[in-house]
Image 1 (cartoon, rainbow, N blue to C red):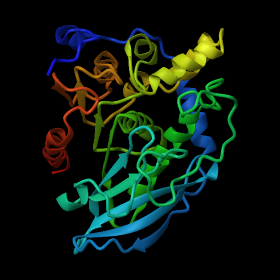
Image 2 (image 1 turned 90 degrees about the horizontal axis):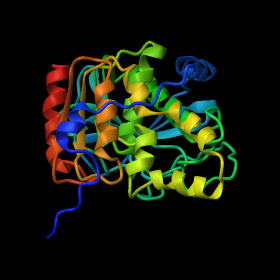
Image 3 (image 1 turned 30 degrees about the vertical axis):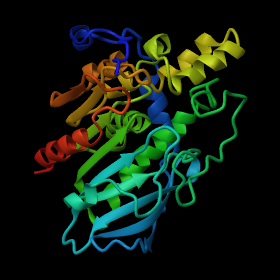
Image 4 (image 1 turned 90 degrees about the vertical axis):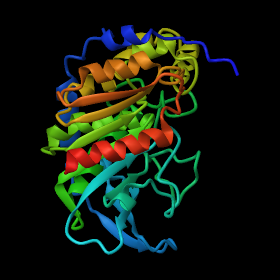
Length: 329
């Protein structure tokens, strides 16, 4: 079996890499305004769900996201629990969602509450129970989510998604079964990007997270990604600009407001990143750009030298379990 060609920088250069894209001058004002405009009641509703599993109790959760739209999630709790639990909030990869009620990561089996949250307008790759729609209208765009509303930061798809994510953290902290002082966030690929955004924006609504675990994160260092990514959803932006000529600066100015590199600088909690050095979907330099800028000193990155976008998979999940246990002890 031949190795995949390395299309990004050598590891030593990656360790020294820094994103050169300036932050938008209005970045903080934009997000403060967005979150203030969406400070309506969470309107959390929980309905117990029968899964056939005896070690985990599951609830179908609905809460009010961006613009008041209902967002769906599963809440998994260890059966026989006592006292408020630390809670792990999970976001999902591009096109994915919370899946079916019995499908879950190991977090509740490790003793955590686990809130696994839909991404509005997605869920087409893994099915699931009543995926969350996105009711917002959108101008013409390339099929997929990457260029939906890209004409302005105010209309861009990920404005809604990142706001939903912050509100999901608020939901997690508000539940009777959870400990508001021990909230962690995790996700891979697009879920890793949402994890970074949620951690960076949480302080703006007074939330103090204990940990963030972005796994092979997407939506970081957009301008670099458009130069070096050879697979995956970044190519949607390339195809959009191929068709809508002359809109590069408009599109890039929008994307800069959602760049994980900029939002990572605002994070205040410890973090564990992962990266695959053969990743052609989320090139390693874009991941290292976000990691280098992370706002807290307690940060680690696990490098998988011979892996593509799958990263460490189960090996990394075991590392996450150990790392998070230390942070929540």
